[in-house]
Length: 208
Image 1 (cartoon, helix red, strand yellow):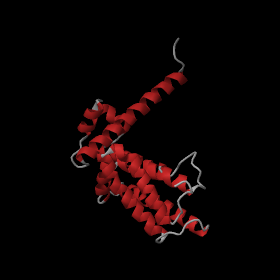
Image 2 (cartoon, one colour):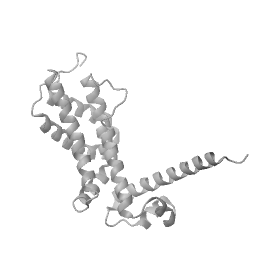
Image 3 (tube, helix red, strand yellow):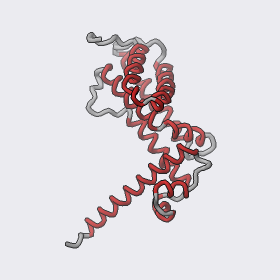
Image 4 (cartoon, helix red, strand yellow):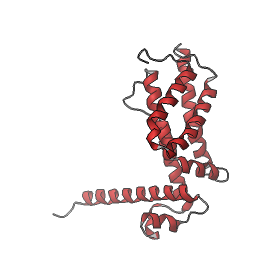
């Protein structure tokens, strides 16, 4: 049976989406491995095993694909604060799950973070993306700490924005440890969660 125009279009869009995702995955690996300046479009297409012409169907240039990669990293960090199914009124559960998600985002994008930060210094398209990667998670954490403090559920050891910035730096630092020791991910999450809760002045659960 011949495909209907709708079915054919849907199948084509699916292939297009898969090819674009493949190019983004491969570009991310190459950028993370050798940096922005040394990467060429030929490096990316070789990694993806597609033609140069196929690359240009989806991206206009190396700068274009790098921006798309940076945006995907930003989205991964923002998603670490969107935790469906987690009880937002339980600070212990929220701390554990958000710590796990944020550490995973840091670890998965460790090499790319360095490349994006470096490129943001001179690239007007990347600079605002880098600011979002850094600042939006810290702003969300700071607002959350302030809300818990107003509710009388936290007694933070320092101003909210200081704790937010400190924990961001600690998590990104521990991402190096987890990248080198993947089997210690769960243990690291436990340690970082305990530290974060103590900085917030939130008592441990009765079961601990």
